[in-house]
Amino acid sequence: MHVVADETEMKETIRDRFGMVEEYLTFGRRRWRLIRVWILQIVLMFSEVQVFGVVHPWTDHVSEGVLVWTYASITLVFVGALVAVVRRMGQLTFAPWSREPRHQAVSVLGYLVTGAITVFVVWVVPPPHRGPTLGGGITALDLSLGSMVTGMLAVLLALGYYAQFDATDFPTQEEIDEAVETWLESLDWAEMAEGSREKERRYREFRQRSEHLEAELQNAVTDAGQRLRDDFESWRAWFDQHDRLSQEAVIKGSVDNPRLDRGRDRLAAITDRLEGINNRT
Image (cartoon, rainbow, N blue to C red):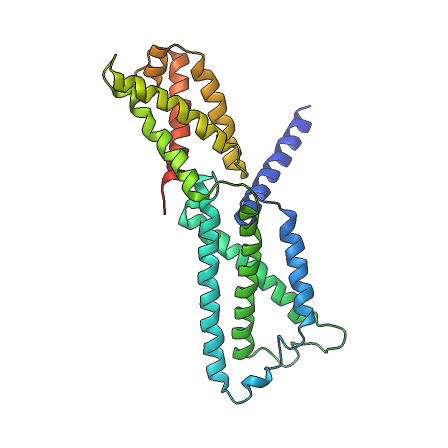
């Protein structure tokens, strides 16, 4: 029995890790789009017989050095566009990691690797009516052209995923940030003078903003976002079971029993993740 449990746990760990790697490209959107778009890119590349090994007629009078620098410059433009698209997608999730520059850099690299694989496949496996493309070796012009096409394919693939956010009623970055920020700010109700009208007003706002944040979290599509949603819903259901004094003690952190202390720890973990989302980069 222990062996079966260990194998099941190992499979779940592998699945979780693969899912995390996958989300660096999909940001929680439909995973099969990645494969479909990748195959479509290969087909389109095969249909263009002049992508590699042959310089287009309009470049006959241009020196190879100028072409190399031109393709390299265009590559930088594509990479810049890719960074912008990936950054935007990262801000349209409820996963704190997706807003961190180092994780976004991994996503950019992942898209570039995917584009490079497409270029490599088309370069090495030519269409039936053409001979092998690597027979004469790889020149600087080939590399610069290949890098440009890699950047272009990476941007197109990223745009395909970004379009999924716009194609649905997914909340905008501004709506996500506002829901998170206003809820975090509403926690100050517990620090106000007891019995004051301002405290009552802020408490009602806290309740309303909690409902609003919970509704926004229903749009979470990443694994991290869905865990945050489940944790917030669970904590809020637990929180609502307690009287006003206990709720205030949990918010303020002035708890005096293990049960409330655990609730305070759960709240701290949730606010840490929400602050990661609200940390605009």
